[in-house]
Length: 368
Image (cartoon, rainbow, N blue to C red; front, side):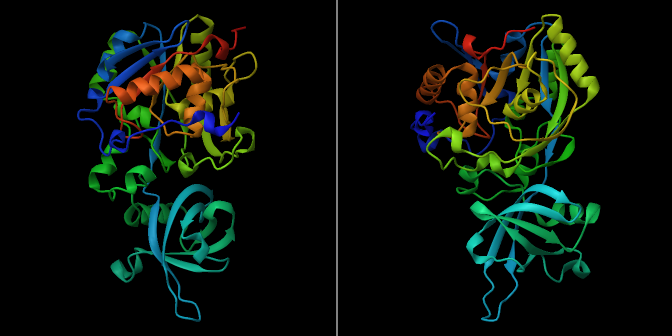
């Protein structure tokens, strides 16, 4: 499909720079695509009344690390030492990360970059990295002078929470973001972007869901910075997704399979949960244990095997995530839903409002 089919106009004032407070006070748009699309306006804390006993909500329990680093390139012969920023997005070794560097044109293989705070704490917060490889789009392979848990500790001290570009371009991250940009069930370090659909949940809402007979399960997908990359091709078939690492435990896959076999619904909380569930499901819709990378790219025409409904925020025009929700509920349905959201004041993107999407009939894989 042509990428411009997924374009729409979004006023800048619809972009949320801070989350709702409390989290479950955000708005929730329910989208039911069967027949004439039905759009229902709710508040997120209404969710227990919108679900059924026995439904299973699947959360992504990844935890965002402060993966945004700032530093300077070591001087070359001409004395130049430009500022460099690097967004870590995938660990490839105890001392090595793939990162998106800016400005990437200022770097070449063999360059050294000093991140952190030189001279502080007897060098404990100095962090040097060497550029080992250069790839397309400003991506570089960095090899650090520290390794393992020591490297993790230094990154935690000198790094910043990597807010999405549409927020970071308007304000710097601050200490509030260290809490705001984590879900209440974040547990496993490794993401450089939050699974933002989960940001709306509070401990009280989780208790209410439990009282209503709604079950929960956890999977892990370490969200990479590639989720923010623009789609630069004209045809979706030419776009390459960045791989992300995820895990589904055997106990979790067994529970989800049992729920679906009993006719109960599995609801993915966020596109990240959906992507790993669909990556782990076979043609019959059976979800297998999973511990691998996935680069699954979902566009209209895809038949969903493992997910019966989706909770997700409002996404960017022309983005892979808007393509995914269009595959799930139908392109025309989602265009209508987004037009309604814009007209009625919904807040967009990571800190914005949410939606509860049900699948279009043509997107459903028949259960076997």
